[in-house]
Amino acid sequence: MDNRVETMAEADVVLIGGGVMSATLGVLLHQLDPTLKIQIIEALATVAKESSNPWNNAGTGHAALCELNYTKQNDDGTIDLSKALKINEAFEQSKQFWSFLSKAGVLPEPENFIQPVPHMSFVWGDENRRYLKARYEAMRQHHFFSDMEYSEDPAVIEQWAPLLLEGRDRDDVVAATRVNTGTDVNFGALTESLVEYLDAQDGIKLATQHIVKDLTRQKDGRWRLEVRNLTKKINRTIDTPFVFVGAGGASLPLLQKSKIEEGKGYGGFPVSGQFLVCDQPEVVAKHQAKVYGKAAVGAPPMSVPHLDTRVIDGRRSLLFGPFAGFSPKFLKTGSIMDLPSSVKLSNLTPMLAVGAKNLDLTKYLIEQCLQSPEDRLQALREFFPDARLENWKLITAGQRVQVIKSDDHIGGVLQFGTETIVCKDGSLAALLGASPGASTAVNIMLNLLEKAFPERMDEWREKLTAMIPSYGVELESNAEIYQRVRGEADASLGIAR
Image (cartoon, rainbow, N blue to C red; front, side, top):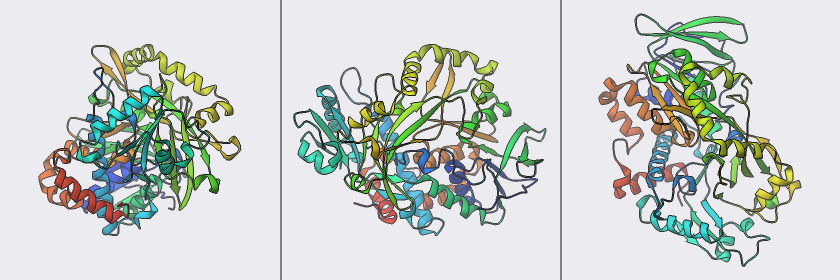
């Protein structure tokens, strides 16, 4: 996409950030009301180059099929499925929306952005085996997970994912689950297609290489954004009644500049990541799955180790990680002053409280930063015992800014996941946080619409149901509708098994 050098002086909607969240919201709004004038602002030369870029995330279509951190074991041994159920239903909404857009010609052939890849969980040792068995027994009772398979037989697991057993002692205690309906998603390709569609519509403009320097509330209730054209080195203003701040790690500083009451007390803790990548055809051919294990003690939830099939631009690779690191930047292309400049009087208490209560996380990050190539190879060999270092290269993934929020009882909490902040009149919304964000983008944006445009939801309900057939229906308690809408979406997207 060519660089755009002019912005609208007035817009109905301004979307800050050219990632999957802004793209999803933009397409939803345009489908609901094609008369809306929408301005998209992206700091980089092209969209989808930060967290949405396929090499900056694992591409897992998060549906809680394999992610063990979404199914906590309670003290009494039972498994808490509440988070898994919520995430699975949210991903189903994403698939329904993508299916609608594909059939409408908004998106290209689905194989350009989504591929069927089984989702597996894999553990070793008696304690972990007992946990995985309990998880399987609990999950298979629910219609979301009724097609989950379980095995402790090395021969069966080897059929599912041969690399897991190559070089492993056959007397080792192992266990695995598999769901064949998992997916690998290229969120970069998806985002590019969504933005390309938006940019071609009348009344919608894309401004790349532009940054929002400031945003202030006007007397008439609208927002005035000061926008810097990085190419021409000039500033312009945009007036709008609605702003969405979906700029990844850059969202927190902009939320702070807005000075809305709902944004006070929020801070951010940046965590960088690295992955080992293998492109050797003879190795890649032996692994067709996303295989998640258990996180190390003290590790944050987004650091759950996994050995994944990736399909990017038609080419298959294997990815293993993530290995956590630390950088004060809020974006890969950010500044080392991002973290210190985000500390304000309003969030100092929660940030200090979180620092004091998460010393195990600090220790974990220090250990990760000090890892040698041999240390990373050893971690990989827990999944793939015969792995050879020369077949793998190290890449740096995207920055993730975890949400810190105030808490009346303990001062502050470090929250993993995503959080939407909407001011009381609905005129400004910001999205903070990380995984499973991209996979649940449609659900997040539907919730945002309900908060920001409550007066229009009745008017939009019929269109929303046409785009997302399960909108307004609780799939968790309705197996028949779930099976129908899931089957229709999977068939349309070419991922049915």
